[in-house]
Image 1 (tube, rainbow, N blue to C red):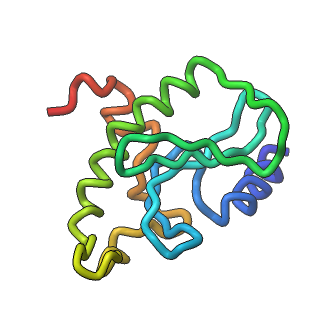
Image 2 (cartoon, helix red, strand yellow; image 1 turned 180 degrees about the vertical axis):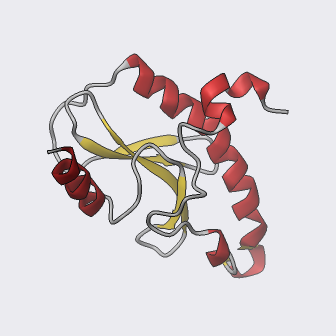
Length: 131
């Protein structure tokens, strides 16, 4: 049963793992730092971290979202890692053209093993340990 659930989850995320920070392109072909998570009712949502520290929750359903304390802590801790990713991505903003260029090598591929998740020391130990 878990295998069928995992397969459905992978299909819903486009092949990206849940609970891991990834870099993708948004609808405007611009970089996006985000992760997929399941709320306490197993409703899938996308958490997007903006370059100015904003956090956006996106879901296909109009249902109420139910967050556990653990999930909220994960989302908050991932903000620190998202800020790091945005610092890397910002190098590819071309001011005079008002566009992004050359950032594609920073994009994560579906099922990429190097994306940041629960095993990252910052997520395990807390953002106060970041130098």
